[in-house]
Length: 191
Image (cartoon, rainbow, N blue to C red; front, side, top):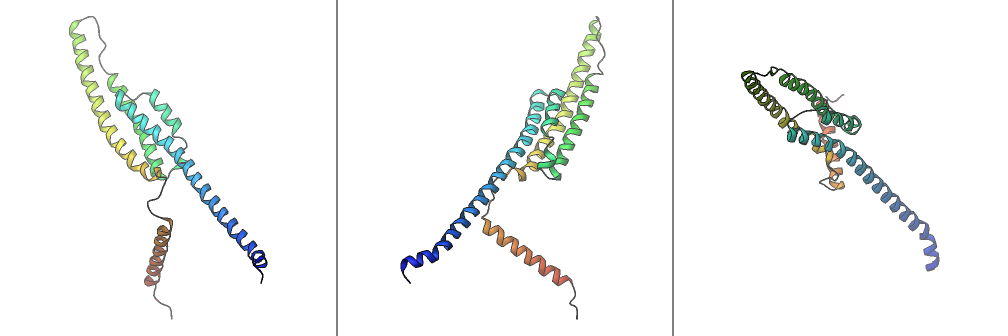
């Protein structure tokens, strides 16, 4: 066989291998692009929650000015996250609404001031006590929610894996083999 004939014979094979490598590279890049797009969308929801909690922490009040953007910016969460994050967001929104109601009730119960100095002084003491109660309630509400946010969102905000794909593949095969053995060990052998 002449070298030119060998090249002609192996040419389609080389082209097929190159085309397969290009196809696999395209698949990998598209998959990474999808992961990055999903990460960016998830990060927007996470940032909305953290900005809300930060605003509440800094201002010491839960107002609809901060609350309404939170609700708007977290609407797509049910499509982007699992049930744990959507459950957390439902708890956050419900407890925020409840806290808003409680704080407005607490701060709205102070007696109205008149021109008398004693009523004004009593009004200030009651208002200070109610404000302390409101801030205490806010602190007990805010700190656990912030800790939970970081814990709940963390698994969804990772772009890259810690292990190589071949290692993950081998672990999955091993897990499948172990589960298959466990299933066969549990069943009695039929005769």
